[in-house]
Image (tube, rainbow, N blue to C red; front, side, top):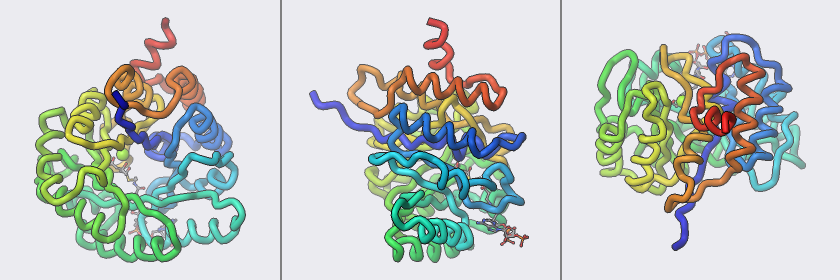
Length: 306
Ligand code: HMG
Ligand code: MG
């Protein structure tokens, strides 16, 4: 029968690169984004407009998004933490009225105060107040907004997370106007059982069509957790090429589940996902070589060795 379409949000250029210690030249970031688009990524998180004091690696995002080759049919989003980040996006859009460099923004908060304070210097309640204004201003300008909730399974600072808190924060983000909320297993400690338990609580108050899964692969559970999320009805997965990345404020956490691994897991399944696996494998090796790091995708390595 008909295969069920799965939307893949490629977060490699943002979540993947934000944690790299050495400065990545803008042309490498642009090269990554352009290669991903050509390999069939349909939604790309291209960077973030956050404080360069907090995340120095993302300082060049304005140059990156105005230099990349923006493909029709591909959606480009950037992460913003506050009104200052949104202002940067709005001034870029105003400067490029014929060819807007960005389609959407994403905002982020967390399920615990300890993580929210470590990541953005405010409690969850204060961050939601701040984000409500950001989301409203973006919607007023016709910009769609995606939301993220971090630490949906465990928090590096306060341990096991109360899934009711995940449920309620997700609902607040949807109520303020986010079209979708991505549930972040920031630490990558989840497994299919805890992911299912978390989702069953989140689904008490939120429609599954408006949720996405964002699984870091620290414990190697990224593919299993992605499949568990699909079984629970989720149809959007965040992935990172070559398994790049990690969050600077989640010590020891590795990158997101590799895009290549998820595409391979979905081959011949009831689900279909965009992207050319062989071409994406090449992109993963290209960026891994530029960064001087090992490719974290098991599938990419196995495909290369064939
Ligand atoms: P703060 O220090 O409380 O804020 O940081 P501030 O208003 O006092 O600003 C400090 C300085 O940063 C000031 O500069 C501001 O102008 C500047 P100064 O006056 O000292 O020269 N600043 C900015 N510059 C550029 N763009 C901005 C901006 N805002 C302030 N938007 C703040 C608060 C939120 C700014 C800070 O904590 C921050 O930027 N945090 C972002 C941290 C981050 O990017 N984390 C990684 C992304 S989230 C993630 O990875 C999780 C996710 O993947 C899901 C998951 O896996 O869980 C999404
Ligand atoms: Mg993340």
